[in-house]
Image (cartoon, rainbow, N blue to C red):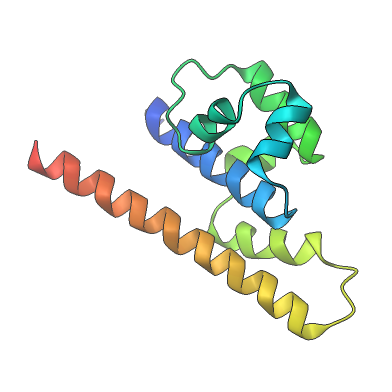
Length: 125
């Protein structure tokens, strides 16, 4: 069995929660207000900078977004694209779906860039 890197898991969950929020076109402040937390808390979660993140908070966010916990934990680049499509499955325009896919690509590229920076930091040490 591979060991679990807690920080990497927090970053993955945060990135996936950000992707879900963005695809639903929800503002950080809106989610924070409705969850009764500060927008800083949501931001730190999405950026993987909340080491005290509890399973309860993750479940509450999953319930808020109406997405299964396992999806948030397991979501990868392919799932991101499929998720963006499924959020807009009722969209009447192919152009709109294409725009949502493009947003998925942007989110995935952003995530990869963050990983590259993280790995560069490890390499320097």
